[in-house]
Length: 475
Image (cartoon, rainbow, N blue to C red; front, side, top):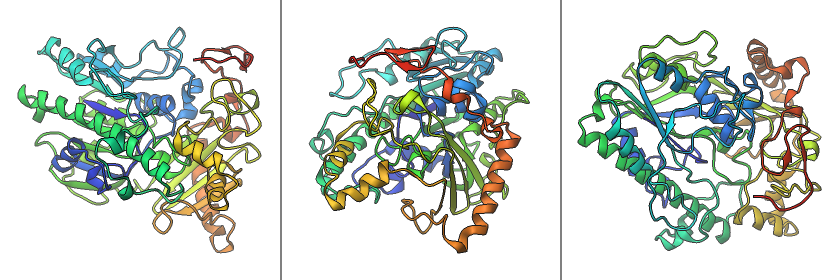
């Protein structure tokens, strides 16, 4: 059972000790199995991250499948398809691979059959999809002689939120921990509290599913993975290559197959899920999968660093939303190694969060930052010298390279790339990054950018020429 929330950063579980959040079911999986300290999505954008998970490939290997509102071509086989071909009963509820075009030549649904019939009354801003009820329908109707795979894709904590629902639910917003790249104001704390509320909603359905497995006597025989697709929908997090966008929660339990209470330091890329689950199912891993199975780490029954070669991970970004003239992407490649993260911004003259002079009919200004109270507060108060600091962190242009020490600077506020004492380290990390990009045939290494011309499959956009149609309001 693969359980994936929508926009949740690494630190935001009660297992991690975050104030004013309660995730007992994530915590149970982490305590009954393995908690991974260094799990990273391939791209901090919904559909590209999910495409990478499903195929075991980096986003630059997936053509328009590496973009939001792109499409995953049928030639890219997904691990749920391989499970199904090898005798598994497969299903999903909630958000699968999306938002994307699902018409030929693209996958209509690269996961499995959808179970989204059961609905429930939910608070404003929360999906009324009865995720757990839909899992129950799948679980009760499946062929019990066959193994199963089920994808639980919650829509939470993706925006929009019911403003103030966190505080109304009893959260003390004075105790909310605000990342240092955001202003510590009541507006922001309340917004984060609302985000926490939605994480808890996701966790509640996770708990109901675990209980069903337990009551059916199947819990110990089921691998349960819980994670997220990308980081929190706030400035300098989602749709960036900073840690709050790419570093995600990950916990796995598997009955008595793995020892309880382990904490793993090895770096896990989300390209590694596909080969790991295929190997666990006894299915040959296709040669063209880029990721590497970490089943050996799961079965090692040890904490700490298990495989010394798993000391790095690579992330990327191309186009998130249509928020620059002609829909141009903002290309980034990163290497996270040890305590260091090194970023290359291939087009530093472009605006990283969206062109302030470009009004898109879909996203408006700064379209790569999800709209909400935090974004609006920062934009509305740019004349305030204190707030202007956070505004620049979120929207100002970036230099060609960035280097941060995550241990000393967890919020990535001090770029060390131009400091003379780190020049050799920058060369080493860039050399290692580019070697991997060449090995995996990233077009950027050939000076190519096919992403400039891939269509943007969103209502109101000309799919062929990649131009927005007029300025009318669109859904």
